[in-house]
Length: 63
Length: 240
Image 1 (cartoon, helix red, strand yellow):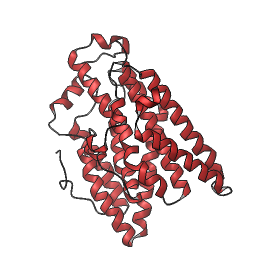
Image 2 (cartoon, helix red, strand yellow):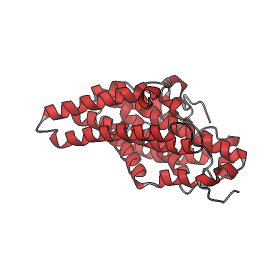
Image 3 (cartoon, helix red, strand yellow):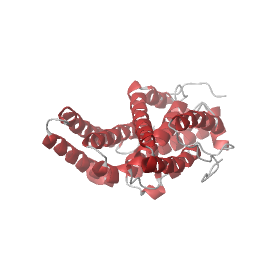
Image 4 (cartoon, chains in turn purple, blue):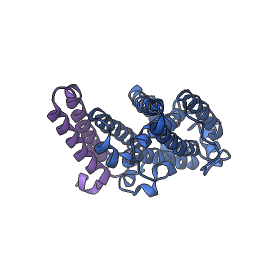
């Protein structure tokens, strides 16, 4: 059985998206009460990453 | 009844019907996993009630993306490219519940309470299923824990809104009324021939009607506990 083209590359790209998102969330959680700037930055980062994912331009990601 | 356990290397040797059903269910499952974030990220991430809620929305989306990734890998390994579901408009999603947008916190909450719960029922279908790579995905304790987390968060937010009474309770009741029908429909037609074939091939465990009834029993009890009214189970339905 031949895997579909880009199976591994897409998997790797998603791992990177997910790691970046979780990293941003985890960096902000301990600072919810003491450092709003860190939290705001993390939320902005999450929004930026998710905008890219929701656009779904797979060919651009993998090129 | 098919009782073998199939690994990826044996997929090619399986009956064409088995192959078709597996390809189909993986594409639908991948579509549903990424369909959730596509419903709520745009409007709910920037407008959630608190920064903590915003972070939870982002984390929920990340976890659903990871579930998509795992399903997409499973599908890709048997030659099915499901990357097309990443760019399709919501209106073209396989499952009707994912075809709109979520614009309010109440809808986001009830989506977790009712629709993510259907997601858990769907994933449970594949536990110990005949295709081992798929079974391993859903038997992964991390996947189960994450899905439970989404459901619990949605259930707690729904209960909080209901407990406030007044307009907040009315708004959450409207959201429950809307998503209740979508949730029941997600189990498909009770007389589905395909559903029987999934069971025959060991890819699913329960007939649609049985899973739907178990789900209904579970959510009805919770809705009543929250002091909300049970929606009419026949209203707004597409599949019975």
